[in-house]
Image (cartoon, rainbow, N blue to C red; front, side, top):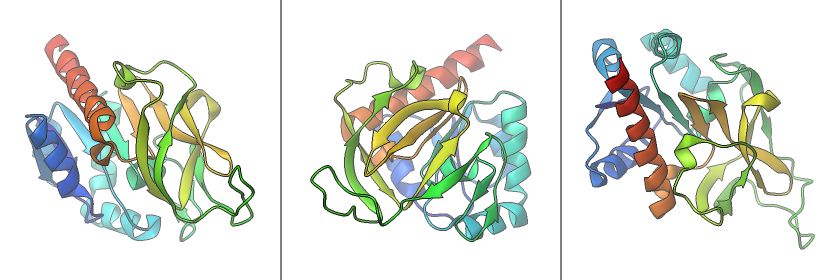
Length: 213
């Protein structure tokens, strides 16, 4: 079973629907016992970093997430979850979870599209990924595949954690992490077949880890 962390940051039901479509058992939960017993954890979210961190700290889920990582439970962060597992976000000047070294940056309105027009903020729409290092979650996905983005901030982890980059006015990190701990700035649950494949790959990895324990 996959635990979808419920910290009142939205976007939970769309993740559950995608997992239901794949017949992957899952539960939206804030219960520590359920999270502890899950084979893997999905940490999604939309909204502001400041309010998200308040909710995480008030519920104790910030420490629960750190514990899952500490015991090598597979974790997948999505969108806001991708940003706040880093150290800091300039959105609300927020100290974030500090699970992965790095910080977020905001798209500058001075950035331009390839045709010279200013970019729109938030970045909203379909974009491809440029693979910087091999990743189990991207197996079986075409290099030409596009994923759906909605964001005004983007992650800037330490370079060793960068898995893919995407270009939108500038080249930014669109997926980061290491084996067993991944985070996507894009929304796999809204990205059609490539996104569903990524979620299936995550669940397959969780089952392999659980079976090896």
